[in-house]
Length: 133
Length: 409
Image 1 (cartoon, rainbow over the protein chains, first blue to last red):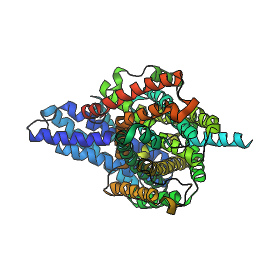
Image 2: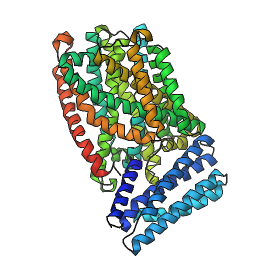
Image 3: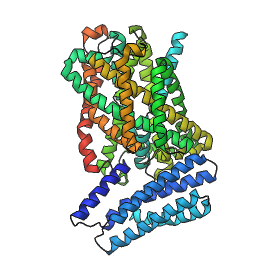
Image 4: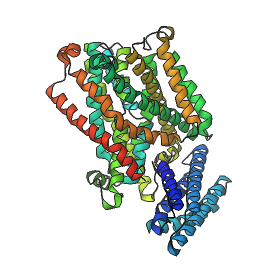
């Protein structure tokens, strides 16, 4: 439901931009929550792969799905026009953390799971703060 | 002994065949978001589907004709057409979702994108529908679907705080659950997933396929009143697993790959293997059922020769309509639409179509001309009317809730 909801939210944002409306910090919060969900799923998938609890194929699907989900959030954040400085800071932080999470997933896909986990932990910390605000 | 075996097999296949892609996705989404806060909806849905599936099976066993055939005859072509339109379109959407579910399950096993698996899934469903005997098809898919019991096992292996789960279940909505309208939107979606229309049509047409008579009513009741509730436990276990592993991490389910994370966490690769086989069997079984239901509803409305007990050449339009439905489902998925998104839409629109599907069954089950002494008693009618009221409320609320909440987001 969230994926379709996000698409609808994206349409609403585009519509809002067209009508001159801008996003506040609270509008950034659900996008950060989506990114957090994807980053934590990827982290869990990597941990399960390292511990031999999942199949390599299944772990790969989890990482692919989460990279896609993060890319959708990044696109939304890139298109969002903010109303004030606080919202702009939140948008930039969420954008940077989401990009860091995608990079971490690509690192994990190349086999460097330790570096990927470190980067994901850092991104999750930022996104957790933004989603909880 | 033979009768006992038939009853046991029927119950097992009813359990294994209860869960489909709609139940899988919606229960996991709800569990990751509200914990056990919507478990009550699953319970209501199970009672509702039992009440109406029993009626539908009884109509078929007593009259020797499938429910849809009797509805058209009893209520006339206009009411029958309304019933057909609602049921058929939802069925087609559900079929599309199930085919997508097969592709996603195969993707979990093979790691290759779902697009490649869609033609494979379509061909596999068609060849089984075309070549395999009804009883074998139903029993194999249902028994393999029992692999989903791994979600119950995983829940115990996760060693959850049962008190917390119970608190979530008895205190359904709290301030932290999010907006109340989103909560009610997911309640309607979950109800739609539990009471998917194709289940009753397949059940009643299946009774005709297997040649049930009034003597088989005890088997029918065992399947419905034991098999379905036990199958519902699988739905609740899926939500509970998501509640234990995903909810604390603020992970909201958007893909099938996230649904199996709790199982892998609890039981490692072995449990995951069972989960993937179970999901594959559940979606494949449901794809067979929805494909057949498409053919059943069309053939029974238009009066075509139908049934797998006939050779394909003797029921050509029935088989052709199923092939066309499969191609339409495959065509929709070929556009690149997310199968999980199709599932989410199908369960909500199922809720919208429910009154048109279930009301005629209630009318027919009360007609002594068809049912003789087996018409609904007071208790059954009372329950059915209560559920019809619930169904009406869910149907009326579904679309406004979908729009207001932006599909619960």
